[in-house]
Length: 188
Ligand code: AMP
Image (cartoon, rainbow, N blue to C red; front, side, top):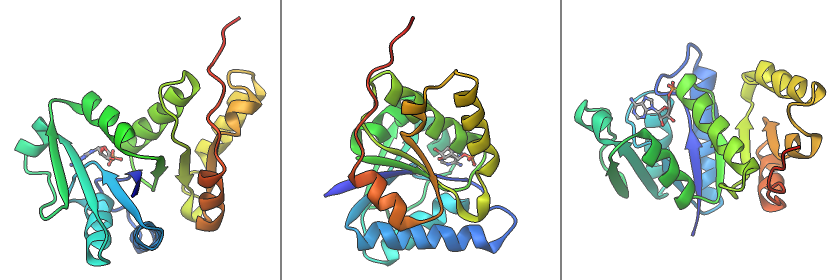
């Protein structure tokens, strides 16, 4: 069974539409027979995503740093649950266990995780495709910023094309299934 790592807000956002998009992604995960790998949290979009996947009969693997676990952040009833020493190990484990990475709307934690996954892809440490599920244009300004990086030659067009921003699960599915990791970054 293939696995998808999903990063998303430990908050829910101020509009029900983010929760609806989360349920839509959960449904896509189960329909496409993926296991969900995520941060193990029980709050916000994270909790909703895991609960919805489970409700639909899917599998959920949660990975949580010790500190957050001790603070009571975990979702109960997951198929698999792992407590790790710290956030760095958690992020590494999530990539190891998954075949693709998707970010739903979220805050700085979500941004950090998907950015790290993409930056590691460029140095040969992550073979998973990275996608921002750009529902309701949530990530439009970030997309513009990545385009600006490319225009200003801090990111090559070849590598830019390896990061997808899309609100269409059909497009996302095609991208994941045809993905070839970027050539390992060279320096000059
Ligand atoms: P944020 O987008 O800032 O809400 O942070 C969410 C991301 O950071 C998630 O994908 C988690 O990996 C991590 N994270 C932050 N807060 C929590 C929490 N309470 N429980 C589990 N993971 C969390």
